[in-house]
Amino acid sequence: MTSVLDRAAEPAVLVLEDGTRHTGRAYGARGTTLGEVVFSTGMTGYQETLTDPSYAGQIVLQTAPHIGNTGMNAEDPESRRIWVAGYIVRDPARVVSNWRADESLDDALVRDGIVGISGIDTRAVTRHIRSDGSMRGGVFSGEAAGLDAAEQLRQVREAPQMAGQNLSSSVSVDTVEVTPATGERIGNLAVLDLGVKQSTIDNLAARGFDVHVLPQTATFADIEAIDPVAAFYSNGPGDPAASDAHVALLRRVLDAGLPFFGICFGNQLLGRALGFGTYKLPFGHRGINQPVRDKATGKVEITAQNHGFAVDAPLAGVVDSPNGYGRVEVSHIGLNDNVVEGLRALDIPAFSVQYHPEAAAGPHDANYLFDRFRDLVVATLNHPEGASK
Image 1 (cartoon, rainbow, N blue to C red):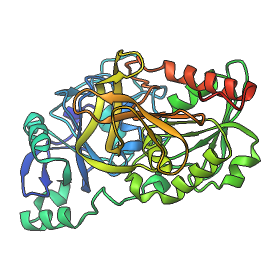
Image 2: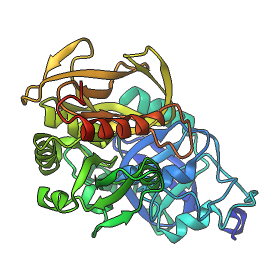
Image 3: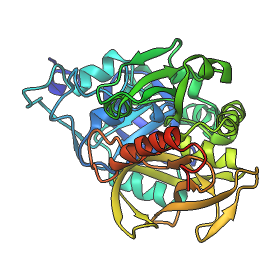
Image 4: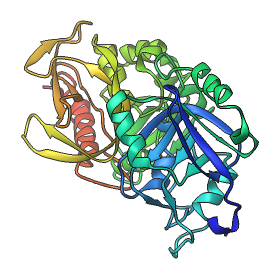
């Protein structure tokens, strides 16, 4: 296991598309990386953040100042690799001090080719993004750190915007993967993998589903082929407005009367399937301390979130689905900025939330939603005409 101190203190620079520059030290792999610079407010759980496929295409800044002290282990990854486009920290841990660690964070970043930067004022970058919004950026280290400033800025400004990108193909499985139920079996569940996390699969299996994780290219015939009792859309990266095929597939699912649950990206796609629009947030919601109010109970949940887009739907009252799926209500609201955090269809068995009830690194306030989904599926199987009411 290699200490950060064993590596040379090579220079690196973070360049934002507005021309802002922050000089620091190379961290992780050396080279150039480009992406949307976003910040995550979690004080812990960096391994889960790094391996969350929803972060594909994004350079993640940790607002917590000290990162890496517990290293990386083989038990906690949310997927098969680190997905962030780049990584920004202020003070990387000098040594790993946790008995569960298999390697240092620095070594893991190098192994997966993740270019990072340390030793910069992450508070200043965070305040800048909160003021001006998330923007494209680049981290340049090794030979790339010596490039002319104008050339570095040119590369950043020529990188693709997050808006308009469909990134699910880069993170989805290629073939069907099945996880058997660990709880009392209910039936087969079709999970469309748009960037699914392992903790989501584990939670669904614990509720009695044989979890069939399908590639994002799956058709309705592929879903029908597993004889499902329900369908699920996972979290994932990219712009929901660029996922027309997934919306069309979801409409087939709803038309067939299959119970549906969606989280994060799945919430945005349910919104589109019901007939609502989506829009890009100024700097998104990322971290494990986002407050959300459940309108039905008035209870405030502290939630884990990772999204840069949101559903555009009326916050108050019950409205008719523009696409003809009956009555719909916004079920949860984000308390920081009044963003739609959940949808509930009242005339079909479908609901979704914008946050992460699986939250492997915590909090677990919203884990009950998996029970709610199980209950919805069981009720639909027993009383298919009235389960959603």
